[in-house]
Image (cartoon, rainbow, N blue to C red; front, side, top):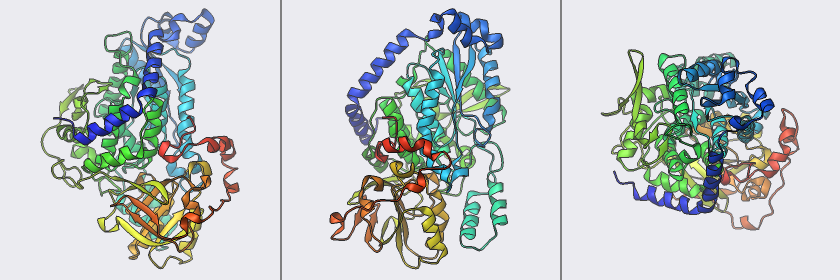
Amino acid sequence: MTIHPRIAEVTRRIVARSADTRGLYLERLERAAATGPARAHLDCSNAAHATAGAGPDQAAIAAASAPNLGIVTAYNDMLSAHRPYEDYPAQIRDYARRAGATAQVAGGVPAMCDGVTQGRPGMELSLMSRDVIALSAGIAMSHDCFDAALWLGVCDKIVPGLVIAAASFGHVPAVFVPAGPMTSGLPNDEKAKIRQSFAAGEISRAELMAAEMASYHGPGTCTFYGTANTNQMLMELMGLHMPGAAFVNPGTPLRAALTEAAVARAAAITARGSEFTPAGHILSEKAFVNGIVGLMATGGSTNLVLHLPAMARAAGIHLDIADFADLSEVVPLLARVYPNGLADVNHFHAAGGIAWLVRQLLDAGLLHEDVLTVAGHGLSAYASEPVLREGALSWEAVTGPSLNDRILRPVADPFQPSGGLVALEGNLGRGVMKVSSIPEDRHVIEAPVRVFDTQEAVKEAFRDGEFTEDVIVAVRFQGPRANGMPELHGLTPVLSVLQARGLRVALLTDGRMSGASGKVPAAIHLSPEAADGGPIARLRDGDRVRLDAVAGRLEVLEADFAARVPVKGDLAGNDFGTGRELFAGLRQRASAAGDGASVLW
């Protein structure tokens, strides 16, 4: 199938925009690849340190007689998604020996659970943890003793941080190894209703707690389609997973077989063999376009609009919000997974999953097939699903219709003709809005604004019964330079209750809302942010604001708006506690949301 003209056009302009930086990146990659891992050239003392803990693999590593795989792990048991990783290093070492290789844990990286920190001070460290993860992974890989790397991470900031590091060590082959989603618990729509009932004061905390425990009940990724599971989709469409690996449950024979296959593949694609596949070659302009297409086709998390530019920058590639918006216009929404529907990722996987989605998008010319992946040349491998036949792993092409057209639909009959994201621009700056879960009659909201500087102030106004008319709730001083850009997911139940009461409601913020924003219109990532004197800092209570996702506009309808002096926020409360003082310098150098809100460049 010929590539769609819009896909080709956006790819061409990304290539042109990135020509200088991508060229320099690839030159550095080739020089590093030609040098090879340092362990073969270490002096005796260095080599002894590098192998002293390697046990039965010590001699092989010291002799550099076999590929040595570095493991970078985000294991901890605070994250249900990462709990399965506890046993992976021992398993990987065993799998590596079977493949004629060795493996060492190069290092660990931090991994915080946004589900724990939502609405808490710790959430102010969340976004910046991505760059800390990249830095930590860079330290792990700095030993320069590895022919390939296995990257163990699943959740929100962890995968983007690991990708940034993998791109920085782009001469080293990289295979991302997922752990899979937990089995389905309490249906997500029931959980949402219970949260709304609690926000409205209709049920007790004990009832809320019982529902939450029934939803998040065991090892594996949370089953809604938030940032973590969007990451897993991306790793497949960008060619960094083994095909079909994303949504196989932990603790199953197929999960173990896929992990072993990932290790064997990492050993096979080093410079020692004939299939040398550096990570930086996989992370091409076409791969990032494929990732954005997947994001739109599945209605994925808005957090990836922040992460993808940062990930791309590490590979010398420059993305712009306009790239996302222009691709969204031509990529149909093919999946409905909560919060965009009732199904969870297990249901999505059973209906055909990523393999079925990839086949649809390839056949419609909406994905670049001619890309390099860890599985070899061509994205078509990802239109096949893994199966175990008598204990042997193989891949079978996915054919036929979706097994559930309430979850997955073909390009010819999509849920929506365009993707899940709209870029917004106007006298309030630039932002984005996820529309895939928003009813069409709420794609345009015009109402007076109520201005708040904290999400807790919004909740207090709600408890006091202050919202009785249509309203756009503006929450400012939530950007990366103000307080690290925490998610405002805690506002979803409150705003959902107001919407259920018949009010026309929207959120406007320079902060984040994640992939769990629900059905409330939310204009997010507003830039310039209030802490930089952005237009949102000139808003006043009662200003008439128009949020128009159809026209892509975000306007204050007040004649004197441009002449106002921006207010200064009181950010003293963000400076200390829960480690926030350690991040003060990072907040000061954070880039704008449209550039990835990164402290690295």
